[in-house]
Image (cartoon, rainbow, N blue to C red; front, side):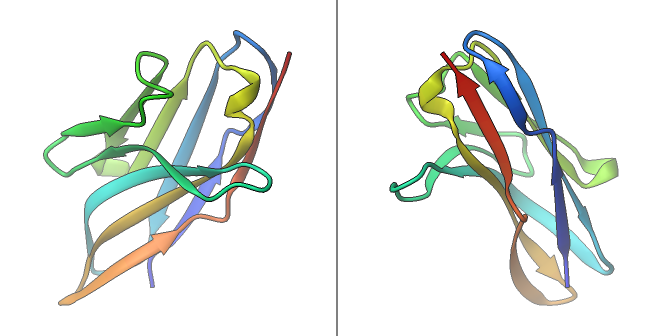
Length: 119
């Protein structure tokens, strides 16, 4: 199994910043894509940002210019730098990592980290 541990959530005022981290651990795996999703109360989970193993990135329109996704392949870790946070960014944020373990495809989810932005 490939396990993910998230950190970095918290409470911040509007206009503030937070940096989320998601570290993957396990054995005999390689990572392809790493994504961040979020889910606000009463809403569906949505893709916030993604990064491929070639470092191509994509962002939801609502966070473009404010959020930056990056990865450290040596640490099997993906980051989400969130600047100029808005109350509508309040949600539980989840990382998703996809790749191969031995010859089998895997998709793992983090436990989620709460981000709360006060107005």
